[in-house]
Length: 242
Length: 274
Image 1: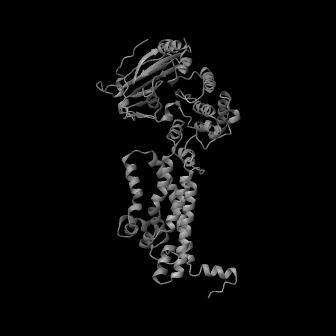
Image 2: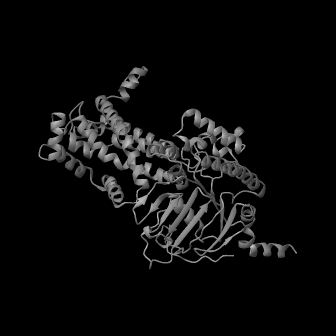
Image 3: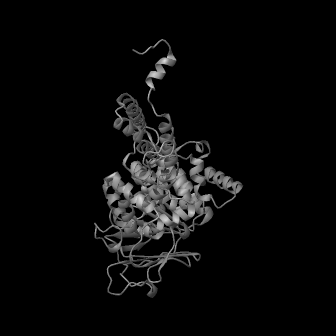
C-alpha cells in the first residue's frame, strides 16, 4: 500500500518508473526536428503550390511516401544510406567523422524524412487555399519570392503552419519504427519514450509502461487539441482574401 | 463604324499563317506608348470555352474602353498583356518594349512589364493595413519616398482616414479605392482595368471614377478599361481622348467613338425611356 501523506509522495507515485531521460530526449528530438523541418516545409510548399511541372508532381509524391511506407522499411533504407557501404554514407562519415547511425543526429535525419509529409501537407493545403488573385497582385507589384512567402503566403496560412508544426512535433514524439531501426535503444542517445515503453513492456514492467503510454497519449491529445482548435471554422489565422 | 478584319501580326511572333483564329490587338496611345498583344486564346488557359480571338485594332487616344459580353475574351486579353496568362503563340509589346514574344522566346514577368491591373475584386492583402497595401509595390523606393507616395495616393483617393484600417474594416467602395491606389502607386506605364467597379453602387462608382479621372488627367497614363456596363463605357468613352472597342466572340467587331460603337445600346436605352 502506498503512503500518500503528502504531494511529493503522490508525485513520486505518478512518475514512478518514468524514464525522464527518454522523455527529455524525445522532447529534444521533436523540437530539433520541427525547427529544421518547418522552414524546409515552407520553402518546399511555396514551390509546390505554384509549380505545375512534372518535377513538382514527382517531389510531392516523394514527400508523401513516408505516409504509406512501413516505418521499418524507411528506417532500413536510411540505415543503409548512413552506413559505410554506400557513397552517401561514406560522405557523411567523411564530413562528420563517424557513422550517423545509432546517434542522436542520425535520429534527427530519420525523423525529418519520416515527418516530412506531416509538415508539408498542411502548409501546402494552406498555401493552395489562398486566393490566387492575392498572389497575382503580389506578382504584378513586383514581389520577390521571399516577399511573397513572408508577406502574403505565411500570413494567409498561419493556422496551417501552426498545425504543421504541432503535427510534426507530435508525430516525432510518437515515432517508433524508424527510431528502432536507426538508433536502437541506447540510453541518453537514442532511447526515446516510445522505445523505452517497448523495453519496459518486454521486461514485464507494466505499471511503468502504463505511465509512459499515458504520457504519449497526453502529448498526442494536446497536439490534436491545438490542431483542431486552430483549424475550426471561424478560428483566427487563415486569411484568404479581403 | 470600322469593321476590323483578322490579320497576321508581326513576322517575329512565330505564329504561322495557317494558325487561325487568333488575336492581334494594338493600342497606340499618343506618341509615348504602343501596346500590341497577340493571343492564341485557343491554346491559352481557358481551354474549356474553346473560344479563340482573331482581331487587330489600333487606337490613338489615351483611354481605350473595351466592351463586350461575358466570355468574349476581355479578361483573357488583359491577363495576357499583364503576364498573368501565358498563351502559346504571339507577342505583346508595351511602348517599344517587347514583354512577350513566343517566336523569340521572350517572356517578362508581370512586374517587369510595367502594367498595372485592377481586377473586379479588390484582392487587397487581408493581413495588411490600407497603408501597407498601397506601399506594397514601392519596395524599390526609399522609406521617405515610399511614405510620400502613399500620402499622395491617399490624398488623391481621399483615403487618409482609412490608412490604418485592414481590408475587413473597409466598405466595398473603400476597398476598391485602396486597390486602385495600390496599383497606381508604382506609376505603371499602362493601366489595365478589368471591370473594377462592377460591384459598386452607382454613387460609389461615380466617386471612384472621378478620382481615377483626375489622376489620369494629371499623369496621362494610357488606360485599357474593360467593362460590360454600357453607362460606364459611355461615360468614359465620350471623353475627347477616348475610343471604344467592341469585342464579341473573340473578335473586335467595331471601334471608334462611343457615339458610333455604342449607338445600338444608346438607341435601345432611349426607346425604353419613351
